[in-house]
Amino acid sequence: MRCTGSFALPFVLALAAALGGAGCGGDDDDDDGDVGGQPDASSDGADVDAAVDAGIDAGAIPLFRNPVDMPDEALGTAVLQQFGAPVDGAQTNCNTCHGMTQENLRFWSVLSERALSQCLTDLAPTDAETARTMIDCLRADPTDAGSVFRPEKLGIYATGAHLPWFRYLFDLAYGGDGAAMHQEFVDQIDMPRNDLGSIDQREFDIIAEYYARHLPQLAQLLPNPPDPEGCVLDVSEGVADHVLEMETSGWRAVNADNGLLMFGCGGAETARDCLTAEPRVEEWEALPGIVVRSLSTVDYQSSYWTRSSADGRFVAHGVQAGLGASAAFVDLQSDKIITADALYDPGFFPDNSGFAFQPPAHFCPQAVLTAGPDTVDFTEPGCTTVGQVGLYQHVGAALGGGDYWTVDSQFVSDNGGHSATLGDPSAGFDSGERSSLTPMIFNGRTYDPGPSISVDTPNEGDTVISPSARLLITRVRGASSQQSGFNLRRVDATPTPGGYEIEVPRIARYCVNGGKPGFSYDERWISYHHYVDESDAVDLGFDGPDDPGFAAYLSQGASNIYVMDLLTGQTTRVTSMAPGEYALYPHFRSDGWIYFLVRQTPSGSGETIAATDAALVLEN
Image 1 (spheres, helix red, strand yellow):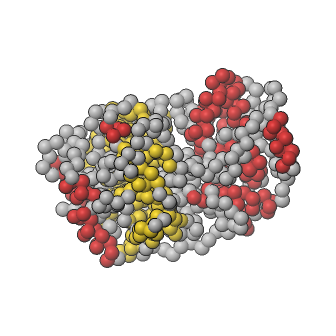
Image 2 (spheres, helix red, strand yellow):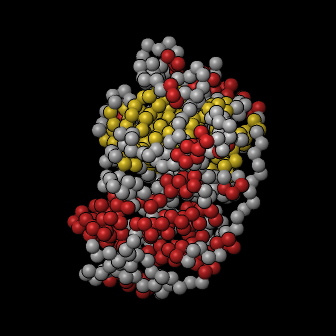
Image 3 (tube, rainbow, N blue to C red):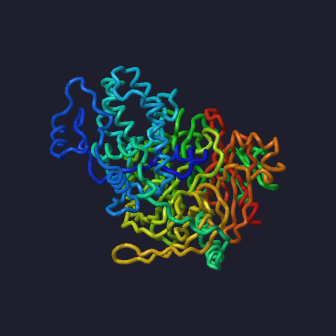
């Protein structure tokens, strides 16, 4: 599940989006037999196996879940072990993606109860129309039969999407097409993702029972850890040393020396002279001297983050509704949409050589896109699938011909702006969090993974790796699982016969909050989006949060793009979005332009891929 950690509205929206990515599951493979009314999960295992072998009687409706006769404490302990919470006997599981906190588990309960009250309203359906209505309720847009399924619509029950009750539901709804439709549903919604394995019916019954009992003894079984200390700006000399080195040897300089052709720069003398053929959007400009340009407008709803290739030609994101596909690349050069058999989390290597997309993690050479396909299914020559790379990964590449890298960690999904989003994603990361770095070795044809290395990043998540793979930046948990700034860490990677040894000392702390950031290719800047809240009223030109003119922001929400100088921590707002306008997911292309996405609420009116030269202005 994609989760966050607070009951405030921004948390609800962030976690609702978040459940679309990763989940909780055991290491056992699902029996996947045609189970009818399964026996009580507390019964003898031989009885369970016998029931599996017996199959479903003709016309029988599988039980959604079986009641479990276990004391509260034993039940809660079993579930926490299953999730990977910090208890004896815990598995490696949900904790690889989500903080195991009381707030997260309780909000999963909110989503699960909502699933039963709003979507799964008949657990013994016999009517095809009823079944289709319940299935459509689980889509991002229930009115669009091509809209993707969203795990947030199921809450914790997404862990059972592959089990017999859901198979029955799809067979009832779609007859002979039910099996194929159910497989599409499982591909998009089943938990967990990647290589964690599926849970079986008995494990699902135990989880569902604990949630049906409203998480008894959770506070005793999973005490909240002490809140980390407050944030104090602290930038070490090591940051300046790194930025000075990257000015002449980072990926921005290397790509320029290698003659990387940037989109929209034909005939341009400087980077700021690029993209002049694209229409300017002055009302979105907040900083004097900058420009914001509209690069493309798409008529579908994207999902989660947007990222682009180093040369700025290709832009990628998941698709929520309106395209009839679950992900897309936008080729700005040919004005073409390339659909993709993925869901979210695109990333492009900084040397313009290849890209990644989830789930599971697919890695492909850039030639797959430059060939001009209509669709990408990740079976193309050179593409590989890597189960060990978790969701919300970011990618980089060592300079001087070194390995490519990915990083993944606990995360808080952020799919805001489809409806009013009134605050930044929470930061419900736990004290046992470890970020995972995976070297990707290019053999001349494919990107193949080496052994992953886990490093301690307690109370930090949403980890991003810099283009050179020599820095990490993380969002930090503060009081009540809200964000308390960013940490900047240096990556010291030492090759060994068995792979790498890695240390990640912290070299800076920045006390500003926002979504998951992106590094510039010269590694002096980060850019991030921040959802408007009461603290922004004065900066936006109002007398305060009670100013009547600010009221629309408090009801419709908005977000703006910010640029921060890693040398000083100074932050500059570069967009000026109206209520209901969301500037999101900023990231740099190689020459210093920042791309970002603009959504408008209510969604459905299309989305704009925009660009600004703000960092280029600020560096002068």
